[in-house]
Every structure is written in structure tokens, then in C-alpha cells.
Image 1 (cartoon, rainbow, N blue to C red):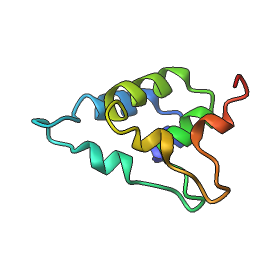
Image 2 (cartoon, rainbow, N blue to C red):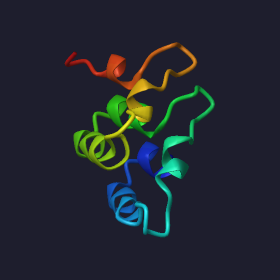
Image 3 (spheres, rainbow, N blue to C red):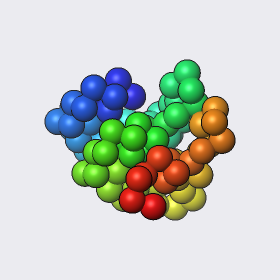
Image 4 (cartoon, rainbow, N blue to C red):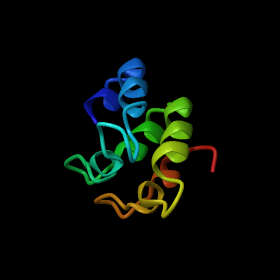
Length: 86
């Protein structure tokens, strides 16, 4: 979460390459993390207008049951509601 918030794209990309069923990191670790406002990594990427991260999170972590896209924060908003282009 901190890497997303601080816009440390290289760190996030390298961590995502270690995610997968046979990889050292489990995607659940990324999906279940939220900040004090209940926002997940997709909320933060959308709010920070980090299009590359948004696309990678959706493709790599959110393709089956959409847990990142469906997660509401403390304001009851899903990540897409923070996108000014919607």
C-alpha cells in the first residue's frame, strides 16, 4: 500500500511479478490490505491517476471475482467512483 501511495511504480511492478499461485506472494495479501479509510490498492491507484497500476491490478489481481473493484471504502465508494473520467 505504501508503495502505491508514494507512487513507487517500480517497487509495485516488481512485487506484482512475484504474485501468483506458484509465486512467493499470494494475491490475497494485496487484495485484503486497506488503509484507515478502508481503501485498497485500487482505490489509491485510481485516486492517484496511476493508470498503469490500475490496469495491472485489474489484470493481475482482480480478474476473477473482482474483489478490488467491489470493495467499498469508509465513504461507501468503490474505486471507480474516484475516477473523474466516469
